[in-house]
Length: 322
Image (cartoon, rainbow, N blue to C red; front, side):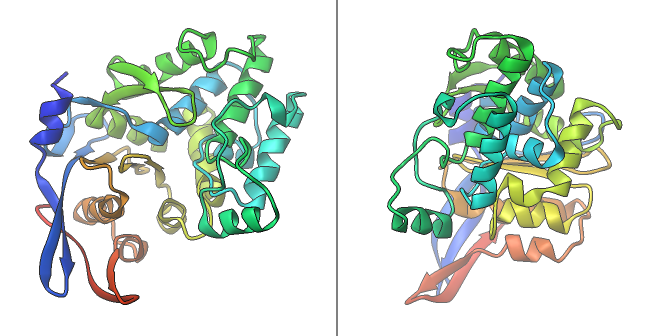
């Protein structure tokens, strides 16, 4: 694989920010489209360098869990893949996953936090609550990890350790779907391991999930996400809107401005904005999909990120070069 520092520093400018007709800022990004066979068909920047997909890895983590014996209904499987907003439907779902495994909420080891969604966060604070593990956006994944350990007979106290059989099974699934070895292992914001693959490898993962044969773990994840996009994100989230607006599409956003999409025909797409800022992520992905022939109104909605002045739109994030 290529050097990640060079890949990031030499990435092309794929978006600029216009305020009142003046270009105020630019965003460098790496982006890729891969064909159903995994071959790169369009590249912007070095798509072969390793990076941490962050929460965009969650569908592949869930596949590793299914291969290890996890069994959840579709809505809870979508929650296992989620960076949820902390709405009541999400908190109830986490409790259902844990209860099904015979575990209390106290067994969650993800970092305590307030709900990710603004309305859910304000409601949580107004009700007198502080940061908790269940309200942190990765609690669905952690609950599913614990449930997998119970199903497989593995230790639940050490499930976050990189050498734990759960994390080793996830690494195998990720490498299998990406078509390349895991390039590095770190600690994610939630405390679980995060595993590096290339931007092209991330796109391959999503293309393979979206086109998976019925009955496979990949197809179970695809179908769960497609049927329950709100469980994957939440009200007003662009990833939820995108999945609901394009039939057969699988998507997952991630911290540090990562976005990955798979289409039913097996094509995969991935974006990594170099500065980690989220505002250019959805516009770049929307333009990638438009120029790949996806013609759905939802792309105009999720790809339109306004720049505000005195609370009113005075500009927007403009994608260039795609």
